[in-house]
Amino acid sequence: MKLILKTFDSQGAQLLEDAMEIDSKKMILSGISSTLINDNLIIAGTWTVGNSKQASGIYATVVDPFSEQPINYYDFGQLDHFFDYQNSKQAAKLKTRSVKANQLNDIPDFKAYVMPLRLEEQPFGFGLLTEAYLPTTSFNSNPNWTNNGTPYSSGYSPYGYNPFMNRYYNSPYQYNNAPQTSESKMLHASLVVFDSQGKLKQDYGLKLDDKKLNGLEQASDFIFTQGVIAVASKKEKELRLMIGNPNGTFVADTLLTQLTNQNEVVRSESDSNSFTRFWYRNVLYVWGYQAIRNTQRKEENTSRDVFYINKIEVR
Image 1 (cartoon, helix red, strand yellow):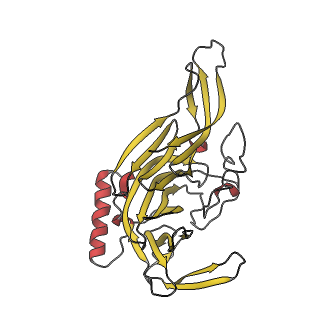
Image 2 (cartoon, helix red, strand yellow):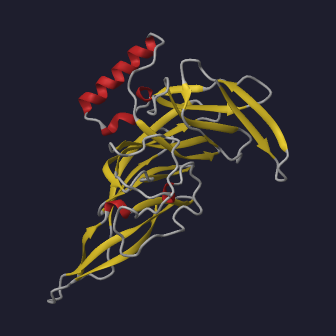
Image 3 (cartoon, helix red, strand yellow):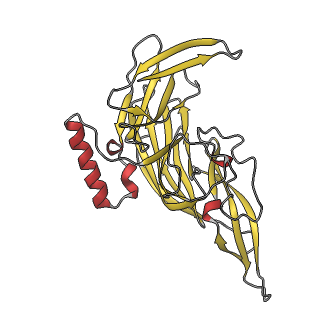
């Protein structure tokens, strides 16, 4: 019924408390707060209707304990690119239903499994990254569920578990924490840009093409800085990028791994063990495992398994 925020100083003393009324027709599923790079603090996440574990849309609100601040709710049909992973006919149908529902002051019936991943703050606004996914029948679909295992519990990695995978990454979901027993299909990455007041400016989308992961794991990441907006994800041998700018226009690009030895080619790559993360400013890094084959050797075993990490600079 209320969204309550408390802030504390470096010694743990409470500085302020703010309580915001939640729309009686809606329920908050998740929330991430910004980090006060600017003076405004924003909370953004997903909302639903009733006790559903699937989200109906996203919300954002700017915290101001000295005045009433509305929570801005948006259903997925109000985003320009959330339905890009659907076929064009289905996407148009869902958009039309959203428009009609909003005209009647109603809530569209479309819902999806969506997890928020990162809220980035910049001088001209905020960027919220979410991913839509499809759980298997045996997968725990509760968006508040916390995994506690290794990312390779149900998959193969020739180099084993990396205990530092999420050490420096701020995420409300720590996926590399419990044994994984089933896969999840990652469908779509959505980057929504809000202005300094938490109002929707524009959004961008990147299809994840049913990227299969060993459990629920982050499949994409983004760069959100002045002059550069990019969403990226690794899909087998390709790094797929959506590169845009703050006015909403964007282009798609695809990068392939370049090997230092011209006699070698990438024979295969584990899709479930390759990941993309933001590093700093306009730089991403990509890592994973590949089977490399030497085309010049005559021996029976010409392949080798390697761990790789690449730096990607977006301009």
